Length: 89
Image 1 (cartoon, helix red, strand yellow):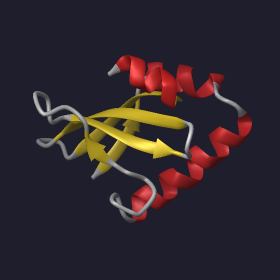
Image 2 (image 1 turned 60 degrees about the vertical axis):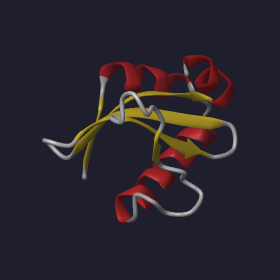
Image 3 (image 1 turned 30 degrees about the vertical axis):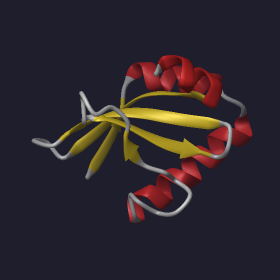
């Protein structure tokens, strides 16, 4: 599976604390090696729209992406606090 970020994701990423950015980069490298590695909790989050995926960035942050099975690519479109994640869902 390939990965890309949207402009909105990059805007959100620019707003998170430095230590969370570093953890996100570390977890991204782990995700590249094994999408379903323990601790990442990479999963589809919407039964009505199985393209929607979430990944854990530490205990307090999440990232969201849309998966295209045809292209085998996930487009990350949001990263933020777990509280904001819950409000988005």
